[in-house]
Amino acid sequence: MQAELRIRRFNPEKDQKPWWGNYTLDDVNATDSVLDLLHRIKWEQDGTLTLRRSCAHGVCGSDAMRINGANALACKMLVARLGKGRGDQVKIQVEPILGLKVIKDLIVDMEPFMDHYKSVLPYFINDTPVPENGRERLQSPADRARFDDTTKCILCAACTSGCPSFWADDRYVGPAAIVQAHRFIFDSRDQGQQERLAIMADTFGVWRCRTIFNCTNACPREIEVTRAIAEVKMAITSGVV
Image 1: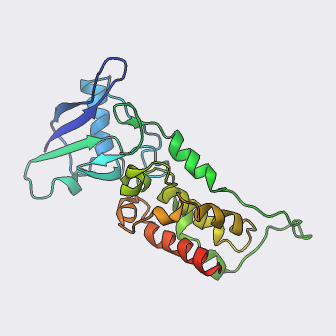
Image 2: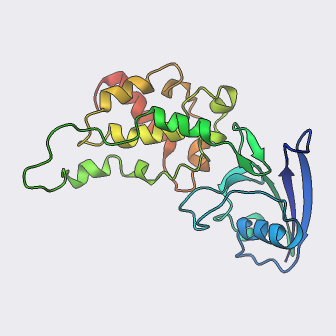
Image 3: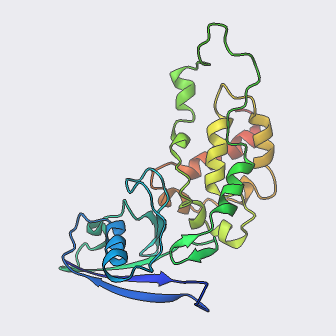
């Protein structure tokens, strides 16, 4: 199979504006990932192509990008999913995720995203003494299941950078940060729920969500992001966690 890739390029050291680079690869397999193809372009055709990646197994979340107009992890997006019904040729368009400043080519500045993440206090808060038996603080399987889904977040930014509310105003904390808040708000062992709910109730907290579901569709871990946001909204309005 042959693959034609159209990649959004930008080098701030020499480019006045972004431009499109076109590349052709032969002997592409349906089971190749988009990351495999980007590696081939970088290693075989153009060493200046710049992208961020690490584990290549959908765990680190570092290679989130827009592929054929939708956010995805390049390592998890297979050619088979992009070339269905197109015979021996597949066309793939790759761009950096939206809403964050492009540093170079497919790499964006993640600092604003991480600042929002930090703002929701994404860590365990409990000042009570550790149980005398020296064991960890326990909880029932039902209590654990309450926030199990939101523990899966890998901070790839696919959900936040796919959110129109975030595009409109990057002061919005964003879906990923709300998912992280949810994980601790509904943890029966944590004691920082009210503080986090106050953060979520802020002007640029959960109420900026317009329930468009882009975040849920973009999540490579299949987290029900929109549902998590709705549950945080309910906790704020009802006062019940």
